[in-house]
Length: 393
Image (tube, rainbow, N blue to C red; front, side):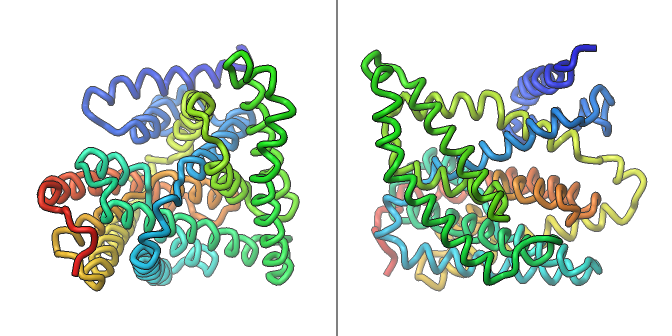
């Protein structure tokens, strides 16, 4: 059998099943995860994970976080930073505490408990933005506050993840050394913003004259891989480096054609493989063999949704928003997608998350996507025609 046959099955499975699920209006990400479950050990047993697929999954994870950072925009953050910071703080702190309490209640060890709390902080800008754009609220002050607060929640979860890994993974750096190296790595990443235009000028001049961006694309991805390697050498996880690299480059890269090429490469190949592999590594058979998993799913899913919605709603109400506007904020805080799945993958790699918990968290990601979409669609449709104020009094 060809060595690339498993890779072909992953690509083909993702294409076929995502097409089928699309007919039922299932989100693209959920369809890819479901396709992995179907073709993997929990389903038809067509494919088993191997070292090649795990490497491709790792590349997909890196590109996922890089694109998340690249698609981040802080241009509108300055005018709403007070409200966004307050909502981000409340909508992160309350779920973090709820996740900690649930982990303690379930009897997990300290590393798993803190990891669960960290994961509860994360949200998803990829779900909130389309809903806000569809309702016409994306460019309103409310829309800017929502998107900025979600970005802060995701960034907080990634930074806390890096700290958690330093404390609980054997052989990692002592906290003072870690903090110093993290600061140096962050400054080095910021330095990339200065260096990228000069590298592109050196390596991309000829291609630009032909209206193409092949060399620019190689420069950007070389910087991405180099940043990830530097972070790993410093004992920091790759997803933090990838996200920071994307965050810095988001303000440097302005050419639409170059961004489109990066988007096609990332979302056309590497990221779909990551989502399919998440499904392949999910053991749905736990629901048959372990009755406690059903209770675990109900507790984790309901705990996360309630904590996220309530904290978002409460923080918005304290800022003076109406109950309906606050419900939109709460609904936008609920979904867990890119950052959450990335954190789950890290937890699986370092054996911090038990198998039944990682499966539950993947189900949490799927459920929250649907719940958030429903809440945001209903609330946004009710306020889009009446929301014209720049700030509630």
